[in-house]
Image 1 (cartoon, helix red, strand yellow):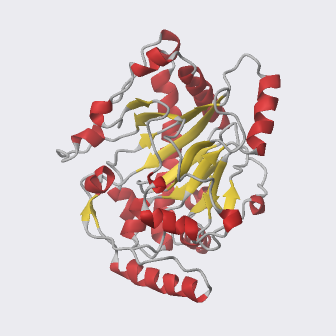
Image 2 (tube, one colour):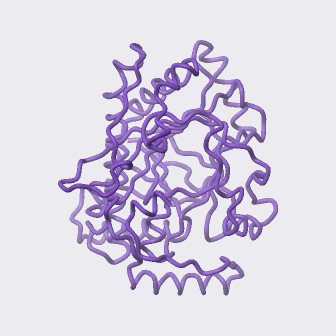
Length: 373
């Protein structure tokens, strides 16, 4: 087991999944850890998750593979593009995705209400993100015909021999570890919110979960204050990250509005962030977490160390990310008891001087419509 992390450096609670997995569900220790998980998501929109089943070696193997993949010539990468499927499988090349916040009024309002020294790097004139992405589905096929086949398309395996032979095993191994960790955290969160344990995990059993590594070429985009992924939230239910080799991810805590540089401890630790689906189903009790990826001073220090220690490896920042979704055909609507509590939390925040802006409506809809919208 890894050493206990200095989680205060990030001001994020550490949730121990081992407690939930290894003790009776009705035990005081499990109940307390589940309540801690739910409260962490309500307060911060993020938490650090400890899961002793997770292997740092699997993450390293995954990062090596993705560095090799994205070091290929652009022409080779383009063979894996599927724009006709809205890039929902395969590769998305750099300068394709633009952060919605650059033109989204509610999002710009969030930025304006942050203290000036806690705001993200300016995205108002930001061109599309200079990052690439690959979507690899970690899906259990539903026993029914989905109304959203485009969100449930089969996977694409790259063609290059030195990539192809390693790809499915490596992607599935690391994706499975993160998927199992985050689905169990969904159970803990449900318990902590006073719901049956499987309330969220059953709703996400057939979700179009995506292992979604992003890649940023630090030879091209390694200058300080380069925005690799502009200020945004995620559409899915929960997002889980393994350790990247390069710092640069910043998240924003709901309770303070402070920008937090992410430092995931080595070993069996993962970062989890709330997405829009959990915000919707909880009526805003849990808010989707804002985040950005930028080149900061720590990124540059790491580039130099990596260049010296591994001169033969590509200087590519890979994010180790999985998006955990609810089923595309699931009817998404706020749970009344949680929506009531959300209004109480919102009022309490306001009384503490934290104006969260205009109230948000969460109309009933299919999850697939929410993702496509």
